[in-house]
Image 1 (cartoon, rainbow, N blue to C red):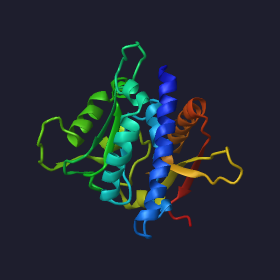
Image 2: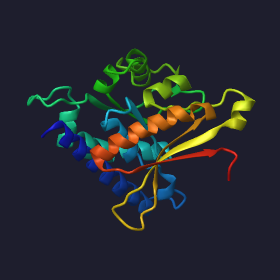
Image 3: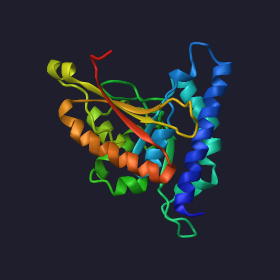
Length: 245
């Protein structure tokens, strides 16, 4: 299996498994948790596999759902997939270049200024990190979230800036009243053209400032072109002032 084929196979496996599991939860959990409450992560997973994002944080509406998704979907259907076994190494026995993929459940009490990350799932690509200009910073953030020391229980803090670097987010949160008023919401959408009546699917969203829009447009074009060629995905960019309806 070639590396490109492995990437495409694992993307499809993740996308199918994610949708199937979330639909199954609609039938078995509280009616207050609907499919629209669950952000689909297949787009972010595609960005990770394409070598665009060093890391991916995955969260569902409740910690219990995130943990269940990790144990019932990610472990058996993704991490045990033949393509994952290839991509989790840097070089396979057949000399196919892997990505050093890793997938861990964050058990440590780690917080950012905005939220607790305990109970999230962290996925990352070692090869993408190694080629990143801030590789040391990203690896340090991973070690903070998923320490290799067994039994590390001390609470920890991670900055929003470090999260933005490891997640490849080109925006930033406001730091003043003026920036709050000027803030825009940026979102990337997947327009699935395989069916006539399909609605765009939100893949990722983040806050930004107007002066960041040119860099965001460059970032979006890089993502759009990469996943279109690799996964035949059509991405759309939307920028909206936070004060807009």
